[in-house]
Length: 167
Image (cartoon, rainbow, N blue to C red; front, side):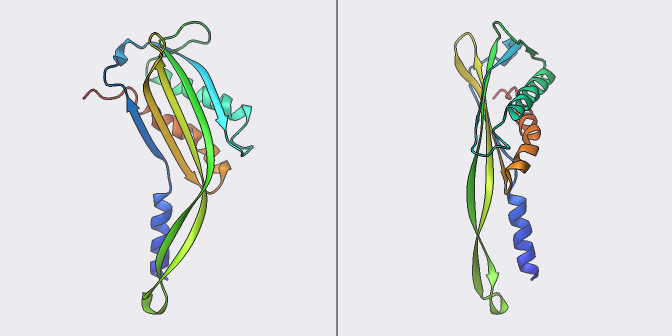
C-alpha cells in the first residue's frame, strides 16, 4: 500500500505546469518599449476554456505582466511588439505502472486521463514582422475548469522569462 501511495504522489507531482521559451538571439530586446495585443485565439472544445471572458482575462494578464516588465500597452496604432496568443485544450492519457501482486512481484498498468491546456504566446517585432519571442505554457490537469484557474499563473511564469538572458 505504501508503494501505491508513493507512486501516485510521484505521478501527481509530475503533472503540472511546463514552460518553454524560445527567442531570437539576434533581437535587441532593449529597443522594445510598447506592445499591442493583435490576436487572441481560443481553440478549445471545452466551453469553460473557450469563452469571451477567458479571452478578456488573458488580455488583462498579458497587459499586466508585460507592463510589469516596463513595456507600455498601446490599444490602437503602432507598437514595437505585436502579441498573438492561442489557448487550446486536449484530452490526453498517461499510462502508469506500479508494483502489485504478491510481495510486489507483479506490475499493474493503469491509464490515467487528464486535460492538457496549452497557451502559446508570440511576440513579433512590428517593424520586421518576425517572431522574436515565444512561450509555450502547458498545464496538465484532469479538469478543464482547473486549467482555467491556472491561466494567470501560466501567463506570469511565461513572462518571468522575458526578456531572455543574453548568451
